[in-house]
Image (cartoon, rainbow, N blue to C red):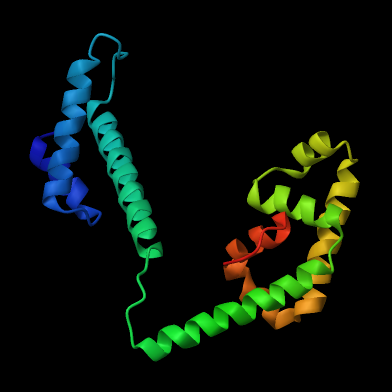
Length: 176
């Protein structure tokens, strides 16, 4: 197994030559640094190919996450009229959400906030509130069902992208 074999293997899967060379060099550096603690390897070719494949996959996933994060930070550039229309749409959606959320009970608001904004599991919510797990599940389910009914099925699914607007409504603070 030669350096060129590893390079060709990495490039075979669509990675650039520079990316693959960096990964191969990183592999040999890591092997050199951890030589004393690594177990003996019977099939060096398989070991190196697997190591390279995993390293390139991790790099690809890292770059994909960075691209996804940077694409989420879009800057609105367009005519002023488009900006006004967009602001009016956002205000209309805020008003619809405000009206719908006012129909929820305080307990439903609390559980929705804990589940979707604090990221807690139903089990954790159950422990923190002292409610039975089935009660937590049923309360959240009935709150979502009520929101679907109040907003209309189509609006409910369109508004899922506007979840950040819900938090101030659930916590009682006013939206900007």
